[in-house]
Image 1: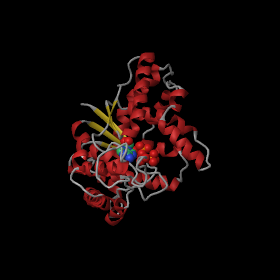
Image 2 (image 1 turned 180 degrees about the horizontal axis):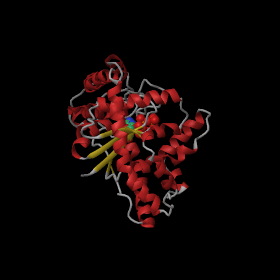
Image 3 (image 1 turned 120 degrees about the vertical axis):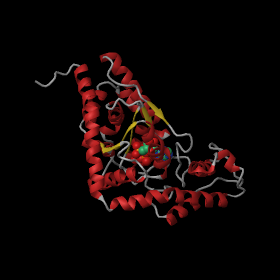
Image 4 (image 1 turned 180 degrees about the vertical axis):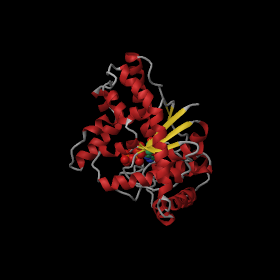
Length: 332
Ligand code: AQP
């Protein structure tokens, strides 16, 4: 069976972008067709300035949301990255496989470096080495497929390069994985700034729909979305990014193809109204299940405990083999 691995970073409240780009596919398809592991990648949240209590809280919330969107622990493995030491053990070998140049070329590194500097902060070394840890996350499990939103595809490409390089240098150790990206809404844009992606850690929240937003908040955000000059509804991502984003979201809610949907509307107002209602209905069951799960923290704990145990058992032999392959002396 194909092995699937993917994760979500507890750097903010999870968004509609996270859901459409990743979580929904994990729950609706991936967990049913493969041996899948899904992870709250909390170590990655330490690559930028962070508040310990907030990361702890967001990690639990993200784990609860993974179950709320429909991941079923009888079908897949749900766990927290820092509970499984194999990730950091293997990350070091990945740092010894990658070059600094290829790390510096990562778009996310460039963007986040700028953001941290603009805030007047320093850039953590782990922001640069982040893709090595992400490669370790993926390769430790013999992963064949990594379902991600478009923004993560470059990191998966680098992971492939590292796997191939490691195998060539030290002998066949890792499966070379590939990214799978959803057909619609692989890159949901910020409603207030439709040329940048909807990102959970962005400071301005009015352009971001969070999975746990109340229906009225969702409606308000969508109704106030920035649209383009002109008033005819056409699907053109380059020239009309605001309207195209709404059409993408509406299509991803199950209403059809974005370009065809455009023909059904003659005003931005009607498009926004339908999109708002579609998103409210899409998120309703997630909010409801989350509210139930919050009442049962022991259940969530037990899922994470079992998940970490299972993940460790899968990862350890391959990480041990990688340690031996690079020439590290086995413990005596
Ligand atoms: N806007 C988006 N559209 C489609 N997919 C998206 N993803 C994130 N934003 C969008 C996908 O969600 C999964 C989990 O993302 P992540 O937690 O690894 O963080 P990220 O990719 O760095 O996205 P964020 O939400 O913007 O976080 P911050 O602001 O902290 O960087 C991934 O599969 C991602 O592709």
